[in-house]
Length: 173
Image 1 (cartoon, rainbow, N blue to C red):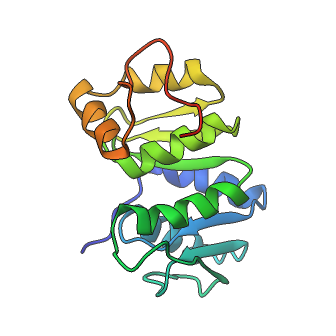
Image 2 (image 1 turned 45 degrees about the vertical axis):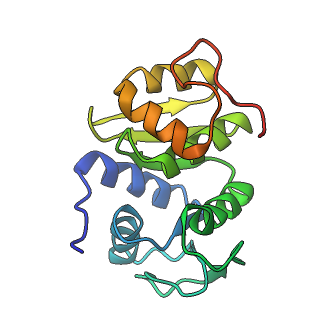
């Protein structure tokens, strides 16, 4: 799998996190996690913790690892969602790119908004950042998405209500 290239806007935001000496909690997946890890490693940034399941797939900066106990043996959505949930529980806020389709990223966004944790989302299709602090911000983000993608993600997450409505299913399941 080839590495994702980070656009200049994302690189600038990551460099801002470095300037602020933020502790970065990041996953080990190929794709965006790997690209962001490579960015931090290239800058020699050391304040990073990589969250992994049993085996760590990527650790570009040889940073400390946080191994998460898998919920089962199958490497399915729930398996990797356990890692995301652990990062969510420890994070003060979120920063993530989103293709406006991924159910995993959508679940992370919903968890963060539900918990009142501010989130910065880079929406790839529109190439813009959105700050989410509440349900209204989330609604504005979802308005940028194609309804069929939201419906597919909602079904994949087992949400009982559609996402394009005046009130979102933000209550704990």
